[in-house]
Length: 252
Image (cartoon, rainbow, N blue to C red; front, side, top):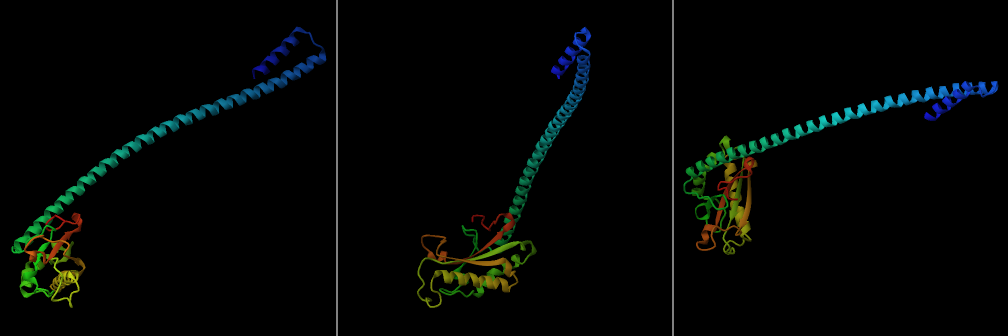
């Protein structure tokens, strides 16, 4: 655009000094008009570009402000989310503590109702085989059924409705001899005894869906020394799933 302006000025000077012919004068005037037109068009285009540049700058500033606003909102949302997560963790811990306290209270009530029944190191209520079963047999004895009654009454109470009940069978490490034809190994005997207790609980009104058995055989002894008879037992382990599977002894 500076070049066009320089040419126009030069031609104008020549015309003003009278150093050109009529034809040259007319040609120069035509060139001046054409150049003025080009200059005007160039100026218009420059103005348009400047306006577009200003608009782009304004849009860029708006975009920067919007990005800053989004960043602030995102930071605020992250802070709120962190606060909510902290509150949720605290809430879960409070709920778990409340459930644990309730569970321990209920387990204490069961143990008071069954003072002769111990809680093993595995968290189960111990049903000693000498009281509940005949040697080498799995049938539940009448004395055992009487001892189980307070526990059954508790397990049928609505406050235990969410608890699952594991009945686990245990034996000593001695191989089966006299009842080998009925029980091929200690695991079979353990499973039969556990299932016999499970069947009795269900017959007395405990929900079948809440009960299941496990057979450990000699794998979880209570003692490695005498008397081995302590290892021959069935354990009833009560699980409260909402409290991260707590058990009666809280040692599992």
